[in-house]
Image 1: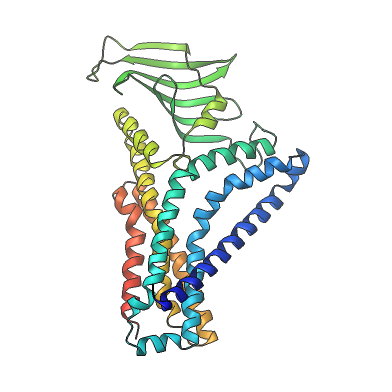
Image 2: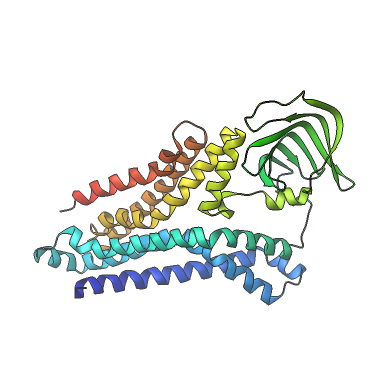
Length: 366
């Protein structure tokens, strides 16, 4: 590695690490102050708090890495430019790519680390922190102020190889509305379908109302006549608390788990749920690229810095572009889950736009 490359890498890495540690520290402090009342009320032990925030570290790392990369790039090249070191490099015959390749490689490495942490550690961290947070807050089962009393479009893969789809889950009443249950065999073929208008959990059992039960053969054809019951006690092992705690969200699932979940949902014909999960699956691959792309985006702005006022303007403009990046990503995800664009395009459209824009801005550098 050239001396120049080591010089640039040392600066970028130092600023990145400093920003990362600072953001981690600030997040812990702000979060602790936010839940200080619950912590004091429940007399939470130091050991539990330490465990909670240690388990939160992978989540924080994934969230703050892109912004740390942005600040590290802006500071490093902004400083080089203000000291006329970039002019000296260009006078020596170095191209923009030769000057910035070390930082670009650094961004690619950070993206790979974020991808690994996001898939390997974040899902378990989400589950652990949720359990500890419930424990800190006293395990309150009733809805808290500001928490919705109704959960809509709940889906869960439960015991006995069953898929549950519930239009409305009413927390205060332990009741469900608009229920569809698919039961599968070992080959993931649907063997039974249960449709119910509503369900109520009482005396430790689920009672469904206005139910229709369909028995299916391996080819998906109806066997016999559907069975109707005005009121029926259904043998379901899951309690209302299980539905709340075990409902799987993409944040708490690895890539392999989401992929397997999509396969199981596809067999049930749940088109909307499959489309949403497919978008979430592609996000698992594209989101870690943010650290790499944010560095590419920061390069043209940082190399334009000449004076302090120009530096502040470039900093503000690059942060605004970074914010636009996240807005485009949110819009793309919404369009994908709405079925307007394909899941792959939904997860990658913001990355493509920012990457092309960054390359154009770099090509316009003197």
